[in-house]
Length: 342
Image (tube, rainbow, N blue to C red; front, top):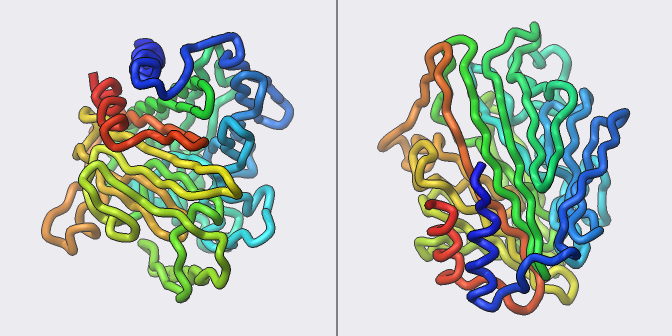
């Protein structure tokens, strides 16, 4: 992988956004093999942890913190926080999977699925000994059914960097088909980020959401003043209007306590169906789904991805977590997106 962080760091320095790299920005990994956990520290502070225990249905980055130490991911179900919504227990930190792969639902699988229904769901099992070196963490995983038949082989590299008020993840995931695999065009996928209560868009009314199996989840409205988030896309869509639209990047921002916080996800032009569709819900699900076209266009068009045995497909995303008074403007995000796209 090329040193993307060097080019991004140069742009940030030129913009006056952040200081150049220093010893305080060094990335360090702390492996806790018995827990199947790898902590990611930047400048000596915990940024996130890579969790891959057998008790989870997929590997995740959780929790995720700003440079100031504020947790921007929802705590539930692993570390519940006061006031946490408890809908969608499969939404944990940052993850990558999909709702319909040869009919198996990888996205919605969690401890909450009754055993009798588990055969309809898929697992992503991380293979032993992920490699952490320099500022990169790499792992391999198999996308399997309940009988442990392998549908896809995953190879993922996570590259981390940080500067004052800034944390960056570059994710590159390659999927290789072991058999013919069909990603059916559905709503729930692929890169997901479940954010903290404060970054939700205020909504007083309860809402219902239905998954591919017809299972309805009720998301409770917030009768408080904590939620204050807002979305903005590179195409100018804001708030709930960002959902189901296409854009090269999408930014979620709000106040957490007295601190300004933003999370931006940038799509890569070589990804399938670029620019991606944003499955960006006001209740705190921030997701990029390039294959949800049928839902987002009300059936006017669709994108079903088929891989033959041995075929490979790669997905790349840039995730930026920022805190502090000076947040990245749309023009600055466009410059970062240009650097990422080179």
